[in-house]
Length: 414
Image (tube, rainbow, N blue to C red; front, side, top):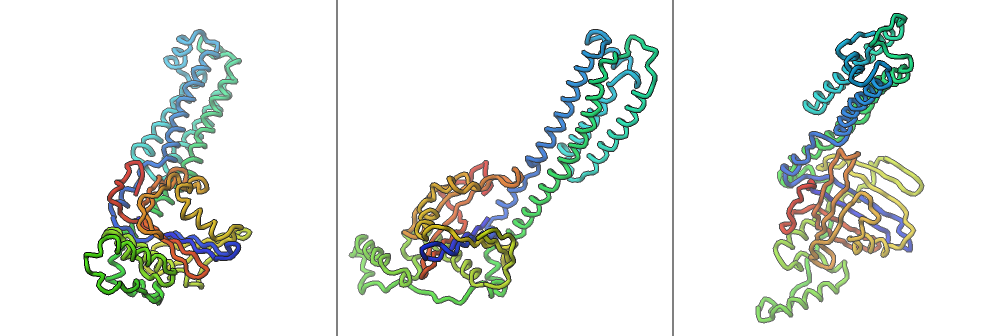
């Protein structure tokens, strides 16, 4: 997935303005998006484990009931409950009810992987109706005529526990599926469909349909590097003279540098720097729009706003906050302290520098933590990032790129 991120800071004694924008843009490979489809989520797995636990728990309660029934040893009690079953004296039908409910739920939500609540509603309704009828008939009938398979009155405590456990477990299964599993999976699928939709709009869309991005790119002057000395095309100058010209260029003020693409040592680095430049242009076009932002959340001095833009699928979010630190300190944490990101950003589990292109551009690798309780799996990103300083504003931008020296990791979605 192509990812843009931006941070802009006011260069005063305190950073009065901090903006963080995350743009889910067009993906470069639809194949990578399709690999994000997760048919069996962690919340559904938790539901299936609880259903299995329900069956095992009921089996243990029934065995304990046999030991306390007073009928005899475990073998004789089992024979009376199963082979000489009667609805007035046996609790084996409650165990069968639980087993039938568990089998139906596992078939529907583990094997078939249904996304509808009908099955759990049906099993819970049948369980409640059967338990009501069983309790009325079991405790309402006279047990004055006792025989060898009639349990003692001391076993009533275990009978109450079995009835309550069966009833409560059935409703817990409804709660987990209807309020946890289905809503989270639905939300994950909606997000994944937006990603898949954006994958069909690749970078050629802007070229084939320039009117889509006509309003999103501001009119900005473009600069070229300073002219090379006369006769610099002569190869006799060697690598040393080329290196000195780079140093002279980097010593210029930022406003006079213009594009730094020519500083790259290879065609691949030039492509990376072009990607970074595109990210800066996209961010500047977003920040230039001051109208139409909708407040999503506001607390103390922190405000989150959102807005839709042409050519961008989904919302663009902007964070504004006041931080009690100098802009240099914040910049050092975000840029120079890339390896320490995991210490303060809980949404990232790994972050490191891969390749330094220029003094203001490099390639980094990061891994995002799981989201939505494991519904969204961890994803890793290889991004080119760069920064620009314009007056009192620091602007850091990054964009996902393909990096041949780092192959995709199987346990992460890239």
